[in-house]
Amino acid sequence: MGYLDLTLNPERYHGVGKKPPFFEGWYFKLIDPTEKHRYAVIPGIFLNADPRKTHAFIQVLDGLQGRSHYYQFPAEAFQAASDRFALHIGENFFSLEALRLRLHGGAISLEGELHFEGGSGWPVTLASPGIMGWFGWLPFMECNHGVCSFDHLIRGQLRIDGHPVVFEGGRGYIEKDWGKSFPSAWIWLQSNHFDQPRTCLTASVATVPFIRRTFGGFIIGFWQEGRLYRFASYTGAKLEALAVTDDRVTWIVRDKRYRLEMIARRAEGGLLHEPTRTEMHKRVEETLRASVEVCLMPLKGDRPIFSGIGRNAGLEVQGDLRKLLVQ
Image (tube, rainbow, N blue to C red; front, side):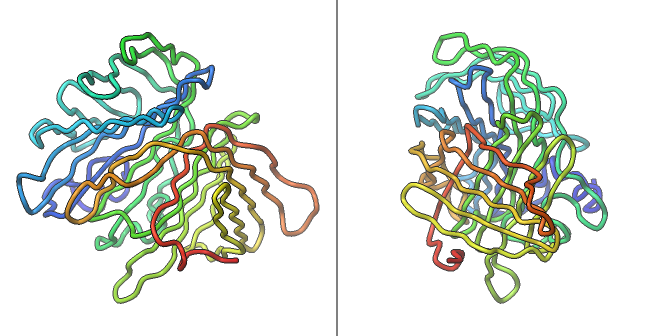
């Protein structure tokens, strides 16, 4: 599979032939219809110059209670298809259409199979192969990002810690990251639980090493019933405000046509492992208990295109943010 084909299919595994340091992980957000069971399941691979540190993994986050567990596997247990996203890690399977879990012996056990319906990812074109825009064509980026499914219906059930949990009729979301390391600082925010169905917000801002300098870059997508509003450094959008306090994140962006205001209420979460160049380091606090007020306004006009509150929001605030904040 060539570089062109791989770039135009960001959901696929990008690690064939890669030398360490390298990581790749897919993020599956699973919310049952009662919204009382909120989980993130993150399968992936970590390649290190020291073969003893190279391994596959599946992270599990109980986003309501803040519990987490890191299941580690030999690298040989990681088997990815080359022509589509289809991934096996031991007895576990992941694709855009389904997942199958057999995870026991950790702080959180999960077993069962879920199917996904009606998902669609960030549009891919030659000029803009996914959420990274034209940056997606650059092979030297420290960390790449992809949105595989903004929102989809979940079918099936899981046994979690021995108890059946019905996900039938729940909602899910899939994204991914790959590269050499996570950024040194970032904010990530996501929700696809609004009163208006088929609505999703995904937003991140991070320190981005680029050639001989580092800049604060952001990518935001607000998706509603098939229409995507994009705000990103590469589109010419501007950060009007970005402020973080102990209990909230206030984030405002604008471009030539629209202004997007996001106010996220923070909540306690669980610790996840993040990839650095040398290890999978347990230091990232993520919650699925946050909420986010969203208001999308046209610059010409006084009626909002959208105004609502996203529930079950994923939120990470990590690292030294001083170079990213805009007061």
